[in-house]
Length: 231
Image 1: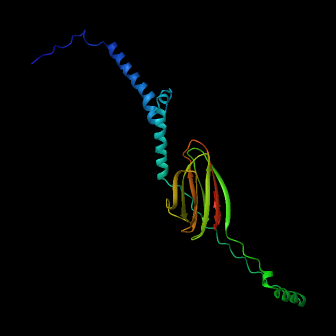
Image 2 (image 1 turned 45 degrees about the vertical axis):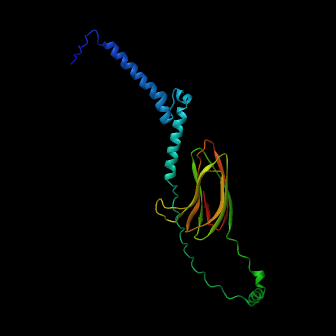
Image 3 (image 1 turned 135 degrees about the vertical axis):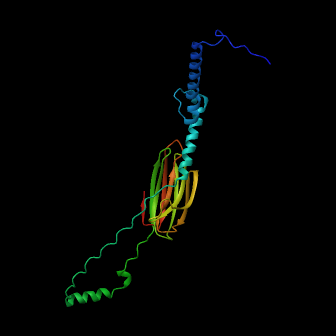
């Protein structure tokens, strides 16, 4: 068995050397934190070295993917629409006095005219609207139509400035929190068109989110049997 002799006092590092080594190690750790860890993990680059090495772009991509995953798991919420109050009927007017003989003759002549001249054609229930919304980078907005069950609407929308993620969906009146029905969705598209029929009374429409680095303007045209537009 070999015995290793203990080092002498002169062979041990001095306190000054130990302090200097500690300071060097601390400065090295701080430098790695600022130039490597912070840019690549949090996209924070106070020195500019991370962007030159491509680490800051890596951090920005990680943050964007995390935000998109969080946004996709949380569907947009739409406030429930409260039905309009039922109007109170007005009191019946007092009976009018009997018309004079001349007035009775005029009424008889008017009733004898052809029905085609006294009845106007009913107004069409179809509506047409054109709307635009502008989304900043990372922003989401929606446009909804108030529709009754089994009513149909045709639509077409296009983008200017980039692509968007979207979902066509609807919520019934007084729906439970988080409940909605999806008619379709897509990612990184420049437009969509088609038609759908409401499966319940409520609000039905579109939600868009801009995942690009530029402002995106969306132009929407709708034609169908709906009550109102909520934007």
